[in-house]
Length: 81
Image (cartoon, rainbow, N blue to C red; front, top):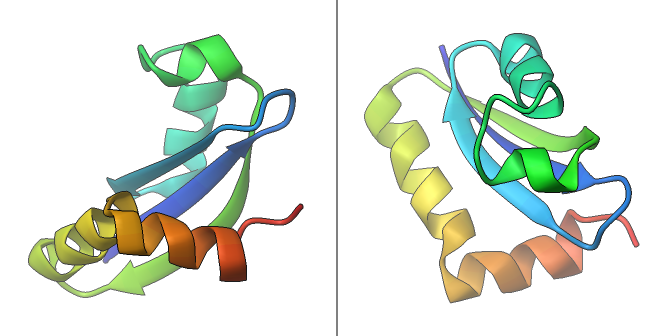
């Protein structure tokens, strides 16, 4: 299974969209500073995830969330204020 996930920084107004097979491990990596972008805005909390059977489906959804329409959808429907 593949997962598309959305993280929200606990101290900054930043979000991050990613793709992985193991959400818990990936969240730990983000919070431990193992990712260049996310280490600046740690700690992160998982606010949303979706499960897919193929990497292609997951990548398509990740690309949507990174588009202008997807960011607008996230702000309106997913990201807590």
